[in-house]
Image (cartoon, rainbow, N blue to C red):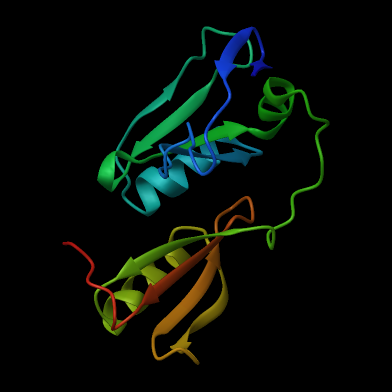
Length: 159
């Protein structure tokens, strides 16, 4: 038995088999101002980027940041993401998800939180000891995206 995915016919999968692999390649954040977010992530937090690309295309302007493990972070105008996805533009909600940045010490948590605050981020929960034995705090980027900066003594963070 076969089923259709778009115009591609796939053979029926065996129980437990998956085409999707357990990886994330790109995280795209919808932003109000591409320039403001570029300044925050590039100039404030020091993430590497080629800057804004795709401006020659209607609804194409985007900036990509190279992260570790071949992961990329993109910032893309909110209205363009809505148009590209075919969904209506909705109101942002900062508690829908968070992005975690794990570090190797409590002092590094404090340093990253300070850097985020000094770069235009909003500290929403200062770093503190956690119920699970770690140390963490939260900040929001200029568009309200929630970031957790955490030290977990049980995790080894590659330098």
